[in-house]
Length: 273
Image (cartoon, rainbow, N blue to C red; front, top):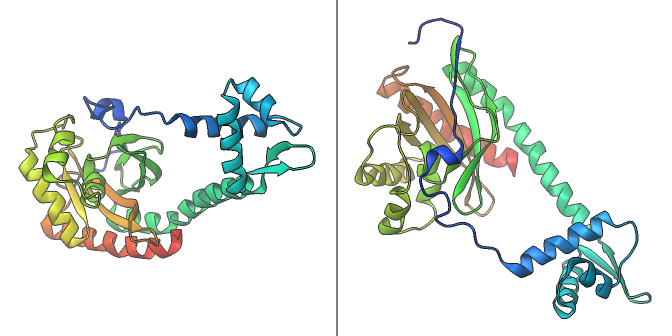
């Protein structure tokens, strides 16, 4: 049990500090997708409808390519086409899409009561993580432990996909082979020595029992336990993680927290989706 001093430990989880190889599976730009986003951004910023030729000239996109992208965006209802004047404007579908993103943020806030309850019950800092892109996870919500000695983890921090207790959950559902995982594992700097064989066993154990643990490998002196939150398709959308000082709980206590998080993750699946 930590001493009752009014101290706060901030964990820095920026991806730049967590990996020696931060672009192992990122950095690829798909030009048509990039141009589609540029077109949507341009139409959102203009005050009047635009012709395809004008859009192509302004954005320096091949006219034929621009027309085909616009036709696809119209089919997806994020752009509207006026057949009389041959002009394009932002469609209602884009507004609906943006509204769904905002709603997701609101749904994340609905997880706070569950996180606050767990933080108070176990005197731990609670965090909610989601996958971001191909090789990162990002902290989207946190509740600081009410204990005098606590760990502060502000939202927005990023980690390589494999790191921490949450990483062991995400990687367990990607379907990567042992060799593929080993390749990514070798590009990560751990706070204390961790062999790949040990890591791989922990991934498999987490898959079987429904929650994962990182015992000071991500950050020296910090222990984390995480459980998955699934989307309607059965994929891991978020992970719910309890972060604490190592030695705060014995093995039985850690198992109890793991099972509590697993149950909370099941409940949050219904709340967030």
